[in-house]
Length: 148
Ligand code: DQA
Image (cartoon, rainbow, N blue to C red):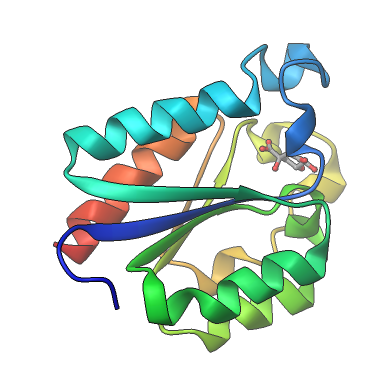
């Protein structure tokens, strides 16, 4: 465990590397890099550190979650489409003793029916969706309150 500042892992799942050009009417025009910069700034204000990682591969996300207990005090995860069917991600989050918050840019409950179900939600502290980039910032605040 790193001493000093608390460290939060931010995991962005599949297709989130396309932010800024992907379905902008749903996800907005912010690029992933700019979203990460917002998180770094907010983290500074909250006196914590964030590490951001994006992958389109389920296994890479699983590996990060498995390694999290040794390094991180909390996880913010936007599992993208994995939200709706990845039992492997769900099991990984359930299997590590690190508080996690699930986030989505869009309101998944106001969209297609297949997005209404999250297999992740039952194993995380909470879910924040529908607030665009603010979903992540709210999650960071919630995690910081929970870990201080
Ligand atoms: C998303 C919602 C998911 O349903 C979708 O597959 C995504 C993005 C969001 O942030 O709103 O890739 O997680």
